[in-house]
Length: 168
Ligand SMILES: [Zn+2]
Image (cartoon, rainbow, N blue to C red; front, side):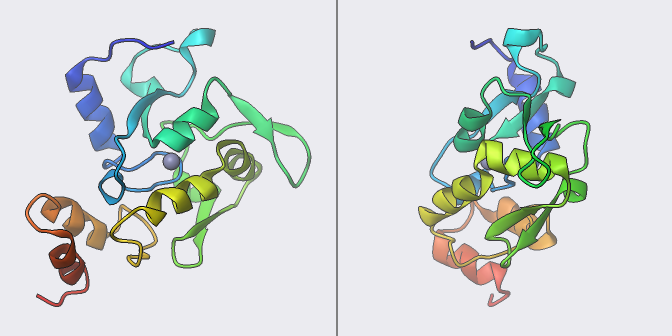
């Protein structure tokens, strides 16, 4: 099910998540893909098209989440609610390992969401096609990444890489 989302509302959601996937936190500009506005509580079960129920998601996380709201925590075997990007704090449920290449769930919610959305596979596949594969920063909300976001339209890839490392 798809629904029209006002351009201004789309912009607010993009800004809210700094143009990164709300789940795997891959930055859109590091991929060759167009990220999507996702309904956290699906339309099919009455979710509304309002800011509080929308997030920015990469195509992989969006596709795997689909209409799901729960998943199984692989540690306890119990069903838990998936991570809610607008209501919950990402860093309380997820952590980076291997310099930002892989995610680890800190809670049942985090673990279940990683499995359900296949978040590690999504991130690795997205970055595999990226020109910036070697930029193993831990979070797209880091200062360095903000610099990249600012400069992404002004510089070519190699030049951006140099800026990231402070060469210029
Ligand atoms: Zn994602």
